[in-house]
Length: 255
Ligand SMILES: NC(=O)c1ccc[n+]([C@@H]2O[C@H](COP(=O)([O-])OP(=O)(O)OC[C@H]3O[C@@H](n4cnc5c(N)ncnc54)[C@H](O)[C@@H]3O)[C@@H](O)[C@H]2O)c1
Image (cartoon, rainbow, N blue to C red):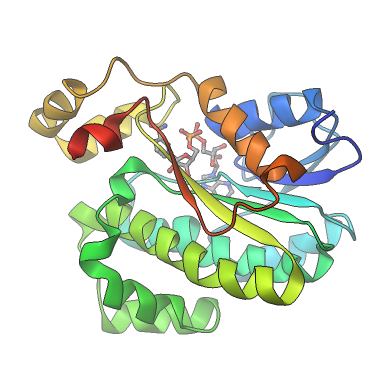
């Protein structure tokens, strides 16, 4: 089995794509621990309630996570319809904080998968800013950089998904060279989950109609779970720093 004997922590496991990754990872033999602010709705091997937007809450709750973690899937996220400070905290700063805190528990061969988005596709346009943010050491320093370089509410979701892709690439090199830990991201297109409606409000009807013409349909959450499980597995042992589109061809259609 692909993930036999591996312990995998999955954030956002109480809904949508994170829930499907949890289900598929268990099917492939993993011991799965969910992390979320809400109670889980799928069968898990363990669950830790955590507010991933609050570094103190993360620090307090991580003692309840296993001493050895082979995989970390950072699927928790909020849409751009919530306050930009919350988007920054949950989708970027808190994700980094949790990841950095758990790296010392990961053995060689460990795998981290971050949830970016098709909406992060324009990361090269703001590469310098994203590299500066990526270079900040920790939650407080990242927050201070963002206070000095504020991000617009209207584009904050896209901005932090772009920033996450850049951080994933930068950090993946150090992690692989120094610790033999792999980090990659996935970039789903639209997926039928509870936050899909928020994306429609966030992007506006015109953009949604334009993008709809480029795709067959939104994905089902289980269609995104398979590539994530692959990235967690040893089959992906030479895949490092990649941002894998899982979007039914939307990114390709932008070319
Ligand atoms: N659904 C889509 O169309 C789509 C497209 C591209 C990328 N994504 C990304 O995929 C990931 C999963 O999204 P989804 O569609 O499954 O959404 P979802 O709303 O179904 O699940 C998100 C989960 O994150 C948890 N969460 C949110 N804030 C939290 C916090 N502060 N602390 C702890 N847990 C928190 C929620 O409780 C929920 O269980 C997200 O990162 C999202 O940005 C989704």
